[in-house]
Image (cartoon, helix red, strand yellow):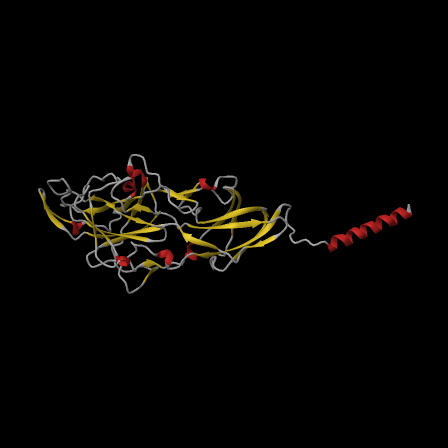
Length: 390
């Protein structure tokens, strides 16, 4: 018995020696590897170029300050295999930060990064734990506006990035920090500026649009958008709303009637209103619109409706007498112009006729004429002359 005990002890020592000499490049779970990646921003001058980006007054908030949450989706053969939420430093942002994930299932992936889809001002059909779904099924929609049951609020700050060839090898550590994901803003902005300095005569008497109060809490802007949401890639849906067309518009209340450049905009020596304009509004929207007035793409054009408060005595469209009490009046027109992600479409509106007390249906077409102001291509602006109201 003593001899057997000695032999067993020696065997244990030998096995221990072999174990200590074995290389272990990765100590995670079987069939998994370690993945390191990094992120940057595609925020150069080229990405901001636009034929309809005339304003020198732009938001100056840094991109990294706009990032609230990030999730990396690893996709193989069109299916989301792995979802990796990223706990980045919200104080310093994500610039120059690397992220390492352990126990990532081995595979040959394409990485898709999406930011801010879960911030409450967007309705996504996926979460940071979504796996097993087709990548093409991931969508993000604008949320319903609590002030209007048939409209949505403006878009959230969505950023997306993609990187092919992200391969995770079992029992290995893979570092892709030298080829960072380049986040790009997926939303656009429409700036509507209003000139209401117009008077006229009607069968019921004279009207004066200078009396229209765009600073009233009930004054609002409606924008019919060409698409209903964003795909995972940042491209907008191309489907259109069923009747009534009012059910698919962005609704924002409250116009800015002060021409002072607000905090977060620049440059400080510019002007956000010209001498003839009295109100403006910036609204985040999804990319869309069309410059075509014929064919199937004509239905993709943006359509806007402006609501302002008219005083007692104002003569609205079709009336023969003035209002007996203050009331909202409306103007509608079609925007012949498209906007891509991370750009501004500036729409300058002139209210040349009286407003209608009946809210018009926001449709694909309108009876307002566009006039293109002169100037170099980089300073082109769209000016809307109102020849019809309602």
